[in-house]
Length: 309
Image (tube, rainbow, N blue to C red):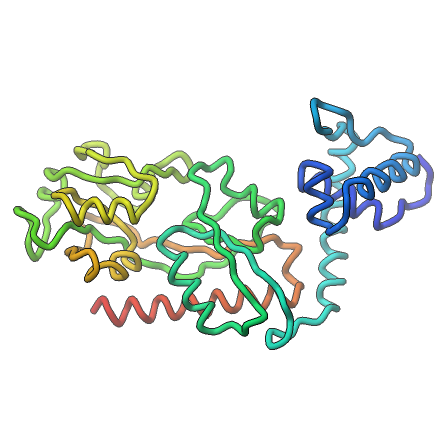
């Protein structure tokens, strides 16, 4: 390898390929074409005198040297990109930009509604549902498919930063004309009834398992749903019980004619965290988006507190 430092643009392209996982995705991320990415990698390979990627099937995989190089340059690359972003301009009244977010089901509609009430016409927010397994949970954020994500747990990753958006409650719901439950519920009643549960895990545990003190495995479960709304709808038409975030129960209490109860067992409150890549810290538009979502979270909490007195 020569003593000269390789061209920064070539290193930036190399870092994009490492982060995106393919030449085509890196090209899309950098708003260029795959041929330009290939040319840049070839130039970098010539400058440093090392093989960077090898063919595997229809794609490429990084060599051991590439992994070592990326580990050493990723932080400086991100810091420099942050400097350039911070020098850019962002005026929410005139800038046209689409932000992309992934969030839990119970917050998607609420935050979209708050954003649409507040943002100028030139700005838009697009929301994706979350993957239903831990392995894929952060892929979209790390590859920058999403600008931000909201989740109930904080990831342990050196490239990711987070802040608590707000704490919320979860509640037990059943239909208004339930034959055995009216006006209140005990732990014994809760365990005797049949349940619709959310079949999504976080850190190898069902979501409710992170907050409840009781042995949930003893419940009689009739339905394993991947959607909170599906569980709510099912409970409104049957004698099943479900546990959902308070924000979602309040949204559909009147429409679905459901009763809402505080959990009749010891439990912790549910945290909702705003999560993003550290390298976006100084991006003016990204900073604006984070502040908007934090403000939107405050409005969600205020609305819940007003309804749940």
